[in-house]
Image 1 (cartoon, helix red, strand yellow):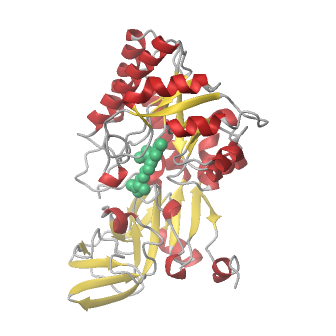
Image 2 (cartoon, rainbow, N blue to C red):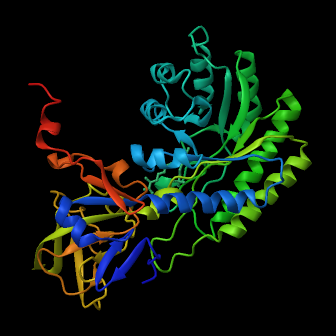
Length: 435
Ligand code: LLP
């Protein structure tokens, strides 16, 4: 199978294995729905990106990966990444608190929010560096100047005027995007920051999510624009940038026909852009930052669900014991995810099934849309379904819709497995409320 990776996802005697563990045994031991994540895959993804870029950068240029924790903000995932030296990009004050709780020092946490209210900024003072999203936020942040732990050293998010992403909802720059300071206001924003007593040390952009070839060209072009803007700001306002953050967005293949990004070519191209623009604009020793989420965790995790019902309902319907509250990407974005019958992983696909969830909404399907089916081996009740590549924006977008619990998660690390998230109970859902 195209998605098999030795020691990560393997088919042995018709059974799907993850990190050397039988999915059938995991489902029997812990129940379903069940997320299973492989710590080694997270480390491998991190290292691959890190070395692909550093290999081509000039020797005295530092490179930081700011893992975008919105992709998966689990404590065990964060700890795994902390141990390999990652920094984090946090999008809310609670994400900042979580990164701090896991032990990331404040120098390694960048807080990139949007519609950020003073209370959120106040909570994060002394815990993270502020990456400002708008002209309005410059003013709101500067008003906190008298607070203890206020840090005037900030970065500003710029919208470089172009974006890319796997669906329009995931394009975060360009004319239709709500994020960042538009490129034509860059000088104004940095000047305003200085006039408000702030000390801008960084410049940032993030143009979208799920970017694969050929759209990756837009990522390179946005990085060029950002470095040109950095050059202009530096020259006109005499700012020496400590870092330039070119954002996340690196896509991963979800289906066989998705063309993956060649990491060596990617690293080389990014390094060439950075070094040539640094020369052109005489920008000296800034650190290059990137903030991938999906690339680091996307393919590290699977979701196991039990087949509850197989019936002919105009179309063959295979109903499982989780819905879009458990995994939202297919329902929300019509996103394609591989579906494997984990106990029949080597069997020939024979019949077309719509794989649907247990929520009371007709869009609650795992096969992209309610009109789409997937050819699978002959399916029966109590079979085990695995949805692949759910590590990014899976558990982190789960909800309690229909009063369904958020599932349990298991992490497999070095041959050992442990529960990294307990399954919600009915009490968890009810006793936070009052009559
Ligand atoms: N940095 C910023 C400022 C971001 O807004 C994002 C993602 C990232 C980094 C990480 O992007 P990544 O490397 O993971 O593509 N729920 C959607 C994705 C939304 C992404 C939002 N921003 C999905 O499931 O496709």
